[in-house]
Amino acid sequence: MSIAWWLDGRVYRKAVSAAWDRHVATVPEPADLAPDTVVKMGPAALGVLIADGPWRAYEAVVAGLVAKGSVRPEDNYRGRPTLVWEWEKGPPKGGVEKAIWDQHRDLAVLHPNVVVHPVVQRLVSEGVLREGETLHVPFHPPVPVWAKIMGVLGLALTWPVAHLFPDGPYLSKGSICTAGAIILLSLLMFINANEERPTALRLPRLSERGEQVVKQASAQFAHLDPAVRDESQRYEPDEVAFAVALFGDRALAHFSEDLVERIVEWQAYWGMLAHQARREEYLRRWSG
Image (tube, rainbow, N blue to C red; front, side, top):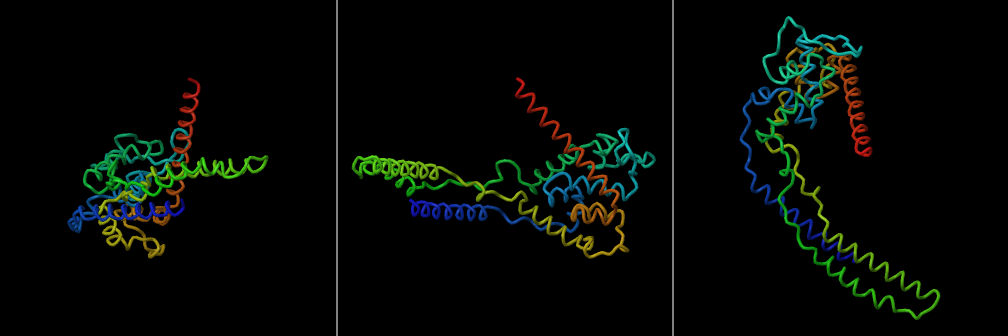
């Protein structure tokens, strides 16, 4: 049975490798990116691509607003540290900044998903991100012949194994246990025969074009890496959002420790709200 398991596993791995080869052969090479593609995509899009989630994108946008003086630190009506808009500057022209302005004036009570989700949708529509069923390579699993053969043989051998030994207070128990073990192993062979392994066929969330964007951004903004800058090299206001999008908390701390503390408190607040929502849903479901 072990040999049959290994033989079917080898056939499966070869089929997976062939499926990947077919997929790679059908995917066209992405066109070269224009030099200004990364800048036009904006820091929010880069944050989504690099960190695979809304928080990095939101942090980058907020840090950019602070660097440009569009928002200032303050406490909200609940006494929690937040950032409020500078009214004299007026609303932003567009993008995630405008979405934040339109949704709520208090940045501490606005969940990143609300304003970053449209960015994710745009990246999917442009073929930079994958979403839904396209996350797996098309694949027809091979029939696990060896596992099924050994499962059938194992079940067929159960009856003779159970009668190998003469009746007795101990020998009969041994033969019954042996037969039971063979039945269990045979059933496991059938289960293994029908088990798919989708992780081996999962596509990366970034498409080939998305990988191109990340590679270009890493090269174009390598000088913003806080690891290669000392404290005397301050970020320019237009650089802050891109630095945080690419390098996360390292760049954010390099720019403003106070902003790091505020964003950490926001994350804890939203985590608490999510926990409360899950608890309320659990109680509602079980209370009928």
